[in-house]
Length: 227
Length: 224
Image (tube, rainbow over all chains, first blue to last red; front, side, top):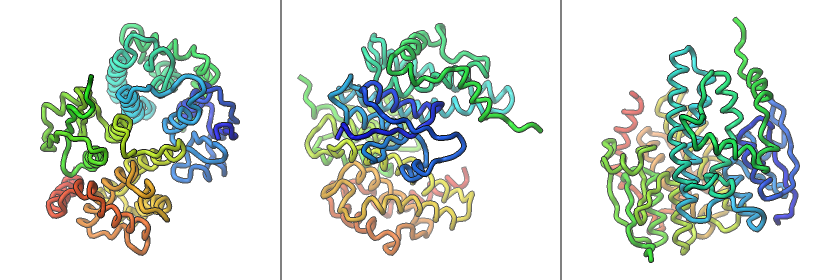
């Protein structure tokens, strides 16, 4: 039943964990946030997600749901009468939202993440160019999906806004570290404005990590051992 | 008024499990479609025009709307044509079907093919890792005729197109008995059940031709 207890296993810095948190906020669903300690995996996590052993995991009446975008869809369907619709209603719009969410995870984020491991200026430049290319594709996708409205999903934030917006904290940390703007008013004017609107949304604000705190965390986890 | 059945085209490839599963879905729903075979690895200008982002099959065109990515297409088909539902109604069961489908494509395929063929680890280790993954599916199918219950559904199409009618052929080429009856009785029963479903049978690549082509793919992958 929708009123059964909801728990979310996650971590404050994880963009994937942000996704179901935003969704639960949109639906005004109270939940218990079970914070994992960085570097170790709790018994509950290993039991609830034996296949991947990863966060986020939603526990609804103790039944686990894994994989962030799948959890978001589950939340939308389970609390369908509460709050705005997270997925678009038209089958084609829904397909576009899912298509771009998959692209973001499988291509765009993979290249963003590889900036961390790029060795030397040449490789870093090449990876940054790749991310820029992807962001330009997403700028066009935003124009196509939003159809003149403020969000990918239209008037309110939805599935695709959440799927992409969750990376904004890490995107800003990467911009600072690499000294290279990935979203800005000249390269990506629409996405640039969308990013501000997304971060201001009341469902997003409480769970978007502070950039400085995230940068400090990034330093810690990506610290290369001194020779 | 837009007629639903008009203008459905599918760009596919005869040995692509991603393409075959979309055909299963269209056939299950009784949707007539025009099939356009890509002569891969050559990519036609039509494919490049319709799917500039990934340049891959399958691509579904419905009333001039273009859809890519097989799992996205399956969900679109299920939402557009409501007869013979592919996904379960219950949100939790739906989430499970989606989870396992992703698992098949993102875990079983790379480990069950790439890792095995590239032989970066010993073949025994690669087989063990693949079987460990397949064991998860064995647990899911135990006690059921199909993943979808009494009739085929989303996960049957995804796992069916990928495992018995694609990966198993690669395993046969490599002389590996990956899904033995002894270790995986549930999955073996499921495969027999699948073979009795007409629309599934229509979507199985012809074996001899497939094995011949698969051998070439394996060679090409090894040397890549």
